Image 1 (spheres, rainbow over the protein chains, first blue to last red):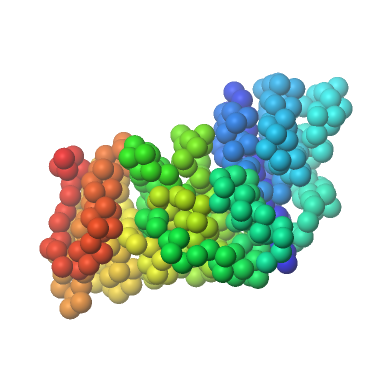
Image 2: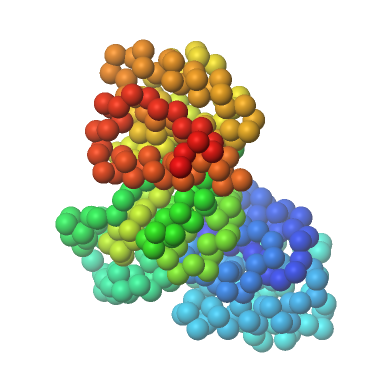
Length: 134
Length: 264
């Protein structure tokens, strides 16, 4: 009983720079995962509703505009309120070093900034996703 | 059926979205779960209007679905959508990108959008999709729409559980030789020529001229649309309603071509 890991890649807030999100979506596709991409400029409510409907294992949040300390905790709170806190949440984009501990305290499992490799992210996902996935 | 599965099903039927989302993932994962869920859904529960949308990649299926959702919601009906995209034959991975076209409905309580990978199933339809349709129906959706992977010739599986199947084509799709071929063209209830602003006349005329030459040919209505501009989609919905009311209609009526802007 195993299924390809289902990942949702989302870009919250006012940030149209999605080259990183697209690179990761295709990279994880090539790692054998099923990747849903919601598009840019999504509200936290949009993202969490998609998480709920898509029955995902992993949520990847990408933000380059500096709003991560506002948007990411909001999304994590919404996930929790809907009983979706078993989803593995990862962050990427431009996240300064000094903000990382704060975000991890809010429930972000890991932060992958510029220079991270696809295989590094894929390996992290495989070893941290709960349940039976391939 | 395990207790966990039973609880999820009860929660989903009671309207908890995350439960339905998880159930659909289980259905995709595990044949035994899928079977026991099916067994739990009473056959007389079937009441949703089931629509299949198929056609070549890039023809505009997702955008048409987006527009159809708006019309359906305008009639105060709820809708569940399953969008299927291809799995990689190399890695098994997939990019599921159809929901991005339906962004305006992300927060509408009456719309549930679910992406599924084809996982190697021919015709773009897997058993998971079929069970997903039953689940949506059991959870009270008035309309269920299944958008297949991009296909164009074979791939008629969608017709087996759709009350009405729409084949979406776009100008440049092919000449009369293509229209003479067997397959999905024979069994679709409605043919849409989308992107009609790119010169739909010759394709629409070809469909009207060629298809009736077949012995057992259904005379499907041909609807011209421009989904991006939201033109002609009301005519498509009217044809869908007509098929729903009279499933035999498309095989008896003469081919009617509805052009963009001519439908009241």
